[in-house]
Length: 168
Image (tube, rainbow, N blue to C red; front, side):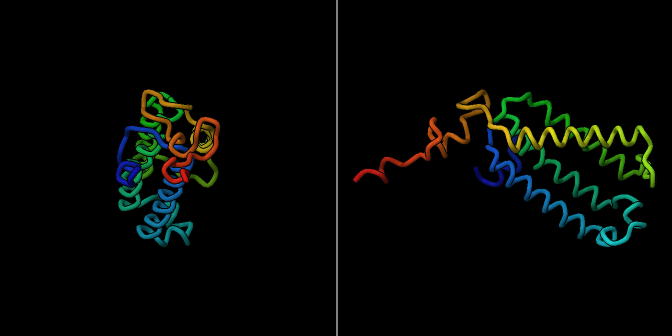
């Protein structure tokens, strides 16, 4: 699968390895873009508490597209409902916009509802990481396409060998 389809296509399936590599590259891109957009926030708590600037918000929204595309394909491999990653993306988009407009109060001591919200989002992210990163997808083809691992392995888990190469 090419990088355009991986990061911008919303159909098909990907395995755990592709998901990890794609997500790690997106996290790295997010950190680099955040640093470039607001470098002082990394070194000053006062500036960091003012919230994200416009560039950081736009970068977060722009990276949401490939994050969603990668997650949709991984959820397709797990044969989960497609609305789940779109729902998560919508929640993240709303959170990002609220944060940009400072509608989410930042206090030195979070309130109980803020802690509950943070705990809920953290639990959802942890579930997505465990499910997408550690659990095997649907074995064999499903309604979203062929098994992405079947290209690398036979049904018994052994590495596939091209008959043209192995014949004497």
